[in-house]
Length: 331
Image 1 (cartoon, rainbow, N blue to C red):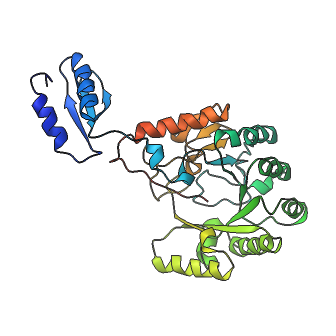
Image 2 (cartoon, one colour; image 1 turned 90 degrees about the horizontal axis):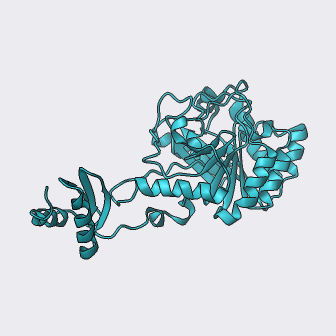
Image 3 (cartoon, rainbow, N blue to C red; image 1 turned 90 degrees about the vertical axis):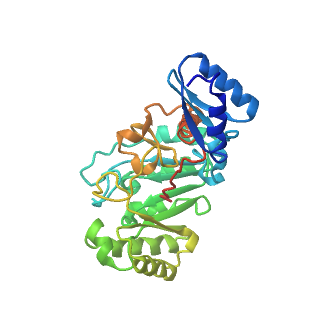
């Protein structure tokens, strides 16, 4: 299209879509881009992208996609740290393929201290420690101390290792700065143990009760492998009876990531990011922290710049309001 000759067609096409939607126009000369940009500036519309062949125009003024997110879902407000990848369990749908045989790939105390020290100034409001199983680490108490000195912290665990020196580590953690999140997938052992291992349900429930007796805020996260509403209702009723407040019940569908053979498809293009750091680098979301397609950078520091890089990438994916984004809650 030659814009000078067919400006009426451009006006007509933009007028035919609702505010916030886009149209794509064919170009015939490099000068068309400048003309479209000038027309958009004059008429209150937005040139989103333009190359030698096409230009995409948003009807109306573009808003920052970050501003459309709830405050607690802005990328970087919640910062996830994979302390390690080895685990005492080998759950058959683990999103990062953890097991007793998985190499540790520990993030390490000194790196975690550095991350925690930079986190408040980078806009982080809460830290999440996950794995693997963090209680496999002999220095977990020091890791938690470094994190809680900077920010409130949630520690994810399967709750099965609260004994001997590991129970001592738990008891040393500050109750006012640490929440303990334990995984329980069903109201009875059968479904939970099917995926996580025989006897794991009873031990997880015991872990919840131990953490409660020790005075911690306890959250429970469940991965649903069925769409049966009664199954979810029964689980929530069980968690109510266990003393887990509804706002501390994290119930999510199975994600098709890691060891899982099926589940919800989660991509960088569709997923609201939750900045995640592992020994390998910075990832888009904790559910994809073992997958190359969600690796954003191998450089962690400076942390504020790393977080801003993820926000910019999200902006590029969601510059128009007709692009949907998914929230997948791990905590």
